[in-house]
Length: 54
Image 1 (spheres, rainbow, N blue to C red):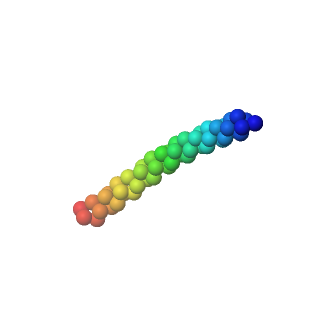
Image 2 (image 1 turned 90 degrees about the horizontal axis):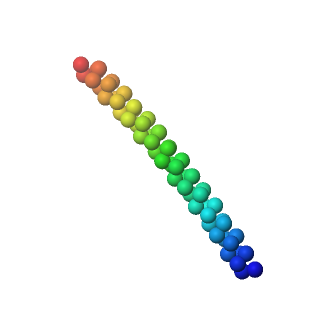
Image 3 (image 1 turned 60 degrees about the vertical axis):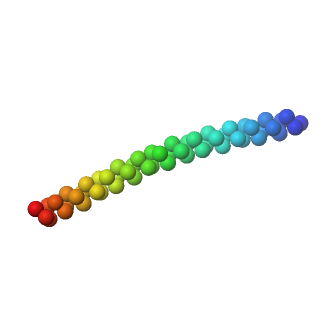
């Protein structure tokens, strides 16, 4: 009986690890998208400043 409980807990732990891994992947993808958008925004601002200064 105790072994069954331990197995169930280990299965739950394994599932949680999988979910955490998936969340890490999603956060990494989101971080990359945010970085790309910020870089585009920064380049747009630089371009506007150059055109107004020139």
